[in-house]
Image 1 (tube, rainbow, N blue to C red):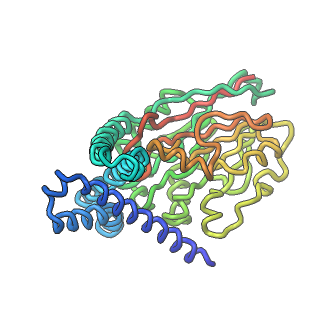
Image 2: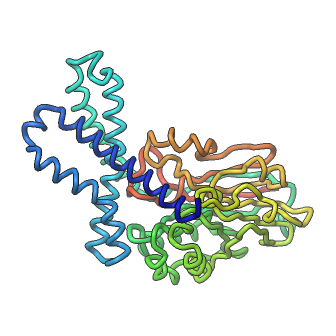
Image 3: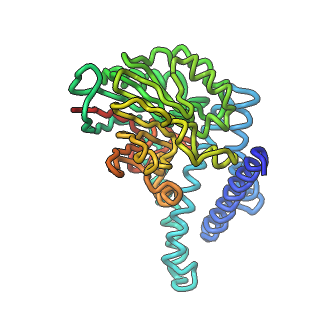
Length: 374
């Protein structure tokens, strides 16, 4: 199957899940007698169609006729996406408690009503949590030596900004101000800087160019750079002053090597080579501290075997909306936070921005600061 066929299959699966969630939620919510009596069937059908269309229509409008109306539709659809996920999760818990209405028939309606209220409350909390913006999470990593006899080097990681129609110039300016306040020696962007449309991010290039550090701003591609059009996204990154490492390494300073790979998840989805790190680690200078950049936290042990001392990743968003973390942990067991793997420190960012719903439940977005210390 070619790349186009794989992407069509992926979209087909996504839309099927989207549809199934709506059917399940509507059947359960309108099994509550008070709601069933209050909302005629025709109104339910119209509401179903409106909500089902909300996010796909918002994405289409953002691409075809960008503007305030398109942003409003997309934002509303994105919020509904998050609320729907929480609603389905809450209703599923209610069904499990009542045995899908068979073990405890008398408790079925009250349980579903409680689930509906819980989903609404959690959705409001998640919106507020995301609106607080990312916190700074700090890690310290011991290394044998640093360039120029330094005793410490400060590195800041941004990941999964998902810039575009929902997160734009003002949001980006606040993130850059956060980074500047940390006074990093080096900045890395570990993928998914672009959300869905490269053209929506092109006007942000002047703002991106204000993101600077003495040892440079470096990055790798994420899966969304592939979805949004790889070549155009690479042009945006380059114009924004970000040096992208594509299955290669570079000296950030004598004795400090950065290695980077194109996103492994997108390569797997599109049937491209996603199993080797050979090119990125070929011919590394020695001795050197090696920092490996990979958007997806995959091939972790392989990176450690090749000499990486620190690996920085993102992609998972830490689940973003609990309990989605339990699903995303299946393909990505290194889900979020810090891990020690075969002598290498792995830090998986929860993401600086949000994808889809502008919502975060229980854990905020983050900017990662890593202090390398001898």
